Length: 164
Image 1 (cartoon, rainbow, N blue to C red):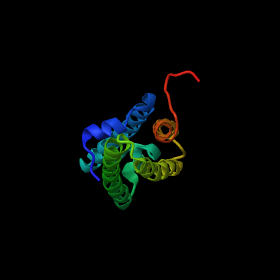
Image 2 (cartoon, helix red, strand yellow):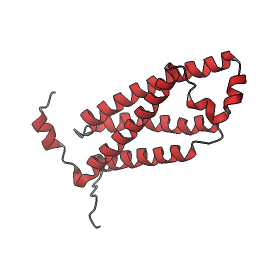
Image 3 (cartoon, rainbow, N blue to C red):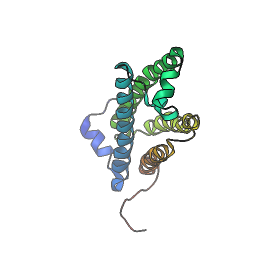
Image 4 (cartoon, rainbow, N blue to C red):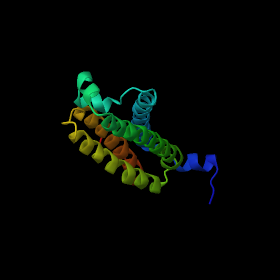
C-alpha cells in the first residue's frame, strides 16, 4: 500500500509540536553520533590513535604499549565507528520516512535499536572509569526526550506549550 506525499502530510499532523520536536531531537542525536564517529574514523585512518587510548594513557604510556595492543584498538575503532555511522544513517531514514509519517512500527524499531545501544554506551564507559559520563548523560537525555515526545505524539495526546 503506497501513499503519496499529500496523503502522508494529511495523516501526520505534528500533534502540537511533539512529533516535530521529537524528530528534531532524534535527528540531533543521530547527527552528533555521526560526527563523533566520522572524526574518530578519520583520526584512525590517518594514522593517529583513536581518543580511547588517550582517555586512559598519557602519550608516553601509549608509546610504550606493544604495537599489537595499539593494532587491536585501532582495528576496533576502524570497524566500530563506521558501523555507528551506518546505524545512524539507517536511524535517520527511519525517522524521516517512518516516524514523520506516523508509522508506529518505526517508533518501536528506534526504541529496540537505540535504547540497548545507549545502555551499552554506559557499559563501554565503565571500562574507562566513567570518564565520559557527562557526555553519556547528555546523549541519553536527548535520546529519551526525542523518543518520549515521539511516542507521546504517536500514542498519546501530546501538546507542547499548552496548559493542562
